[in-house]
Amino acid sequence: MTKFKTLDDLGDIAGKVALVRVDLNLPMQDGAVTDDTRVRASAPTILELAGKGAKVLLLAHFGRPKGERVSTMSVSMTLDALQAVLGEEVMFVPEVAGPVVEQAVGILQAGDIALLENTRFWKGEEANDPAFAKAIAANAELYVNDAFSAAHRAHASTEALAHLLPAYAGRAMEAELTALDKALGNPATPVAAVVGGAKVSSKLDVLTHLVTKVDHLIIGGGMANTFLAARGVNVGKSLCEHELAATCEQILDAADAAGCTVHLPYDVVVAKEFAANPPSLRTCNVHEVAADEMILDVGPQATEALADVLKTCRTLVWNGPLGAFEIAPFDTATVALARSAAALTAEGALVSVAGGGDTVAALNHAGVADSFSYVSTAGGAFLEWMEGKELPGVTALER
Ligand code: ADP
Ligand code: MG
Image (cartoon, rainbow, N blue to C red; front, top):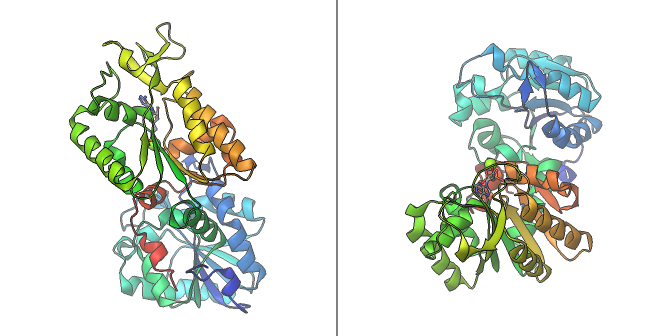
């Protein structure tokens, strides 16, 4: 089925040099890695290649050094986390091309792993410079991309290299692409999408793409206020982009034309101040919001109706929380609908795919991240995929 070569297609790679693009852009504090999720995501690919006897050269970017060697942005800062997760010694090589890498390859034994320096220390990386990519490729025999999160960038280590060496999707990349294909590429229908979060303006392309792709579009969060206002609802002091009223009408018209049902909340949770459990907290119909109130969550009746919508669907794709979930009790609708989706997934009734920084945090908060079919931590690349954009790092891997 797959349009990509995977590690299953490798054949005998004993003693061969494999360049492996991974995501090591890890959150750090005081020189220590605070979250090694991305390392754990790529560990199976790295260990499988090493186990097959390849000499593994890891390639990654770290921070934004903009084509200069910036010592505080050396990818070697991730070396300890890398070795701890892999349970293997990793050699650090302070270059990505040239004789120093060549020498390192000579020292490495089959099954050994080395980490090359931050690709963004060289201008050729972000310029997707073919000569730079050629110099990197010169020391290797195959290329594996396991960094979906960097695939929306056409950079030398994500794009050009894939054309210069036999190219394969790593296990994490393969899992992400398979999940995304099930969600919007070749989904079981009907398909529902939940789009929430703060602003319509940040997700215009997502909304425009989804109305042509899904049967049910559930709009929540601050962006629902903008749609409600466009429909003539008085949303009081709510976060709302009134200037986007016409755009919202266009999206609703496009949904109509495509046979996509748009769900906006009809009851909401409001308060006069943005604080935990404020005294002014109340639930009301969307038409009863007072001038000094803010809509901060979808109401209980609408949430129940949305859970019923999910019961009629086979596929769910979710980006953006339904309310201001960081503050109690405005997490209620997000948590409830996430748990409904998780239960349907557990029954085998629903394929559920979610992504987005705050969305992942909200699903963790609801305790259901592991119960979804797939949760993408890719951030920008996930959003561009939801916008229907081509991802250069993925396209370059196609057979
Ligand atoms: P993601 O990171 O998953 O793509 P977003 O960044 O688009 O999600 O949106 C998350 C933010 O939206 C959260 O900080 C949340 O508090 C905010 N938000 C959700 N609903 C509301 C609302 N009704 N009013 C104000 N902010 C909201
Ligand atoms: Mg966010």
